[in-house]
Length: 252
Image (cartoon, one colour):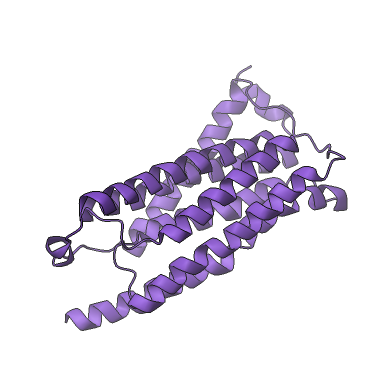
């Protein structure tokens, strides 16, 4: 079809496609900063397993609900990747827990944190790749027109809501763990930055298609699961700021 296909895309389709592509790009690489951090430290003790398992179960319910409800393809695609990424990160954390029981040699090592510039550049790269990915997909004719039809069955909503509330509560064990240890050492700030970016753009991609009451109602669990977690993610960012600064003061 070529790039002339871009002229046939409506504004709503473009907004939904671009933000959905950015969200997908964010989630594709979300776990990798934490995987790398765990690998460098040969430990996953800093991240709460309760957080990861709740996230995994939430993704399972979200995936079942999105497939059952025949939601737009970007929702199903992201849910599938959520599930696979969760399994990868959980497997790594469990591997280090089983293999490395003594961490004295790890605890004594000092690792540099992520700078604001690194975060900004990383997010910029994700946004650029997301936009380019959508443009290329449209050019080769891989984008279907969004389906605003909403299924009459509400059974899939039950799974969606269960997943959404699991997402909301998943961060709590991590927040408590950080509070008790008064530290975010071993956690990747980029992991949570990409999560925040993915959730925001994910919600925008859904809302860009339609804002009718029925459409919002049928997609509300997925909006709740993405927008509802923003407060928790921002709270974790504050913990990075407070405990990171405190750690720097103690090291001087």
